[in-house]
Image (tube, rainbow, N blue to C red; front, side, top):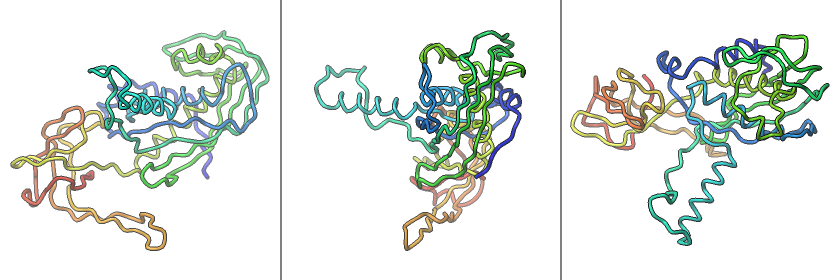
Length: 304
């Protein structure tokens, strides 16, 4: 397990880059959801630290522009319950009824545990807000330690893990990322030192997750072919842009005969694609080399 020692200020500044700027700089996006973090530290205050962690981290991930952020596990569970209720025939139905079969699946799961909380003060608001950042304020010291895992939802494997530490103390120039009004939902303690330490620890965790994306395969699938055009199930939502290059082909999954675990995937390339038109959830591609006639629905699409 790797322990990250990074500048919280640098992490927060990176996260604060507007989504439009992130998109302009490029970078394909992955669907991700955050599960409630277990409170193994035994800390209890006027707000639930596990719920607060999920809220803050979900917000920060969304603001990076690098993820398709899905609702936390309890929200998705509530959505499924509503869909089941609507499908039971006990509702009025109509256009407002939730439809089943359209939930976006998460490629990546973020989970973990809060392992240590130090709270030397009841905290205070104070401080000065500068361009979305809160500097200074509060008294005493708050510290939050957590272990964070990123999990592949297909295989259930832990892709990477780290320990993060968030600190907020009176004499330091504390930087608290502006994460909306989550404090109101958790007893108004967004600005106490533990609350600010949660935000700092989440910022460190998000920077770690961003650093892992280059190690996570980005894939799509052919949904239709029409003439010399190939339609791929990834669009602007996933960060695809005109001119993006893909490889399409047949993929053979190599499994461990003893456990059934996926060991690797081997693609036989059929053709090379270039994106000529992009919609929200769909890309229309032209074949630049290879056998266009051999490309068919269901084939895998990888980055070139």
